[in-house]
Amino acid sequence: MPNRGSVAPLLLLILVITAVGWFARRQSSPSPGKPPQAAEAIQPRVGPRDIYPDPERTPGATNPDITQQNIRETICNPRWSTRSVRPEESYTHRLKIQQIREYGYADTRLRDYEEDHFIPLDLGGNPTDPRNLWPEPYAASIPDGGVAAKDQVENYLHAEVCSGGLTLEQAQREIAEDWYRVYRTSVPH
Image (tube, rainbow, N blue to C red; front, top):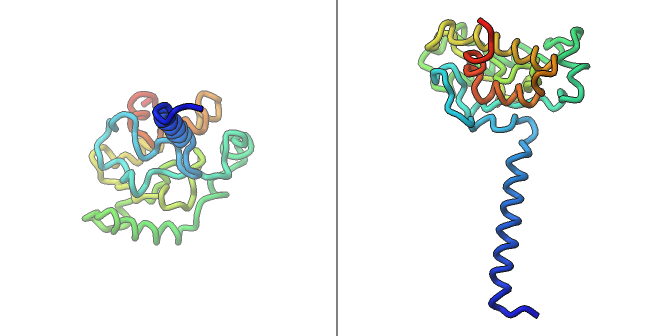
């Protein structure tokens, strides 16, 4: 039988190994509906702050019904449409009003914002989760507030996913981490 002096370090080692393993599994297994590392970007974002949603309020959320395994039947199927999952305008209208207040925007005119799916529907973004919707301002520090530029990124990443250039998860991560970096480095314009 081991003596008391050798048991304590052994128990401590087992505890540390268990904790490290738990932490590693937790980091590699994103919460359902949340893209990996959506709230905490690996690198600083390259665009001005006002073109991104608040990462605490709107980190992005994914649609559990759209997976890598079914993209050929869903988002990459020419007969599939975002209309099949898009929420009612009454829902997004109410949410826009609420979120403009929560974001503390001085400009409260609804027409100055697009209620945007941070992870777009055609990249498996959650249609109704408030963590994936935000009032994207048209008047931000880049032309049109970035609305048109973000739309170009969405189209580019959708094409990449459907051609096999990126996995669905990679595209979701890229748009959530820094869509403007993708715009500046990958989108032809």
